[in-house]
Amino acid sequence: MARSYKKQAVKAIKKTHGLTIFLVLLFFVAATLGGFFAYRYVTKNDTFELVGEKDITLSVGDTFVDEGYKVSAFGKDISNKVEVSGEVDTTKEGVYVLTYTVNHIKYKDVKKCRVVTVVEV
Figure 1: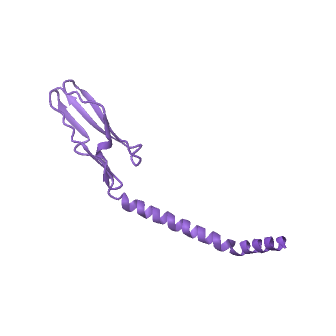
Figure 2: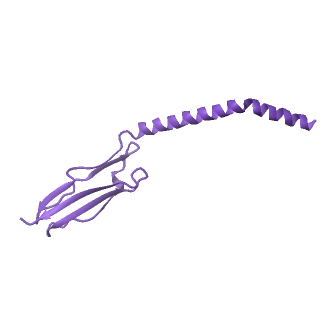
Figure 3: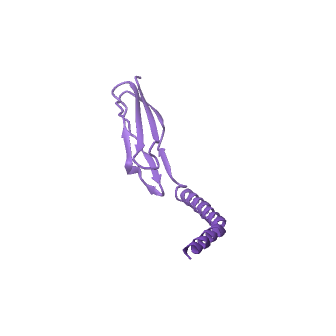
């Protein structure tokens, strides 16, 4: 008796197997497309940009004022998560590089640089 239930179960699985695979694939494709379009919609206005010029030339003794940056991810302003490395010494001639990085999953490996050249007049 148990053997006949096993045969019936195997038969039932074989009958619905193709339909099951089709439905799984259909839902997978629909979920993937839905996730892609949702991501594109939520992130369409995301930016990581420097305000002002990327290359600046100053004379020795001038004052350098960093014009800043704008950073948004997933529709929110995350400018407060920007880390700036490097310094500009306007008392000495030289080329100084400021590097901007964001501690956020979207911009994990993105760096922006501003080059400030201080020249003797």
